[in-house]
Length: 321
Image 1: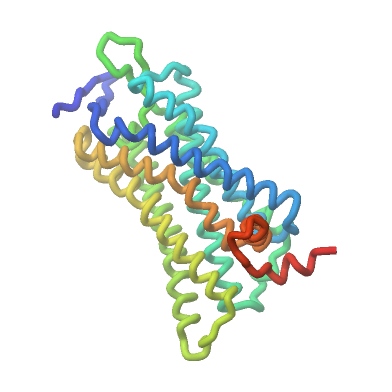
Image 2: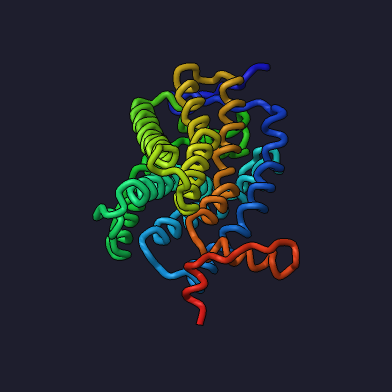
């Protein structure tokens, strides 16, 4: 299958041909939206009306907001795919949506890394000053992360040229992979920084998981508390999210820079983008492992239906009048 190539202002662009992946992508995004939204709304309700505020809940709240940003962009991407890749909302909105999606990509990795490091210190070094960080200090940290990510992700949104999908046509495309296939020196530098960002975050997550896992299964930790075992499951799940949702996109993106306009790589990148959007549907598992009020509310609902007989957390029981 031949990939159409267009030249605009001395810049070469590739347009993806219709494939099985692109034809089913819209249905995958619909499922991700359907499964992601209830978990986000439920978690925000728990954080604002049930759970006490502390540092770990500040990190959790920022992860939820990051997922909410992604969900605001998904309906636009779904509409775009149902229209046969005809973007009707204008160039500015396209830049904004791609910017929001890219911000979610970075902030999700950043806050998952912070959560992983926080669990690492709380399990292995419970008396470290990091474990006693105040809510105000946590807010300063997350604001710094937000500002850094918003600035880092701004260049491609401002500089990306959006081509028409067909020659002599007013039909506007809004492809997520253009920042990878654009052979500009600035974009190559930007994408290299993005690669370092992913590798650094992934290294922190893997290191935290390996150390905590080794600690739990060491001779001294036999019969570890369920809170510790829950931390191991949380870190393992974060590692899985990185491998499934974040690493494929940047990997195929780097390959696309080396082999621009490769149809197979564009298809693989589109498939990986669908996986990267999936993190908003998978993150409720992280919410459940981090917040006792989240778990107990779910347990209480299933217990009230007579389906289960879960024991409530001691933390939430202490807050009852």
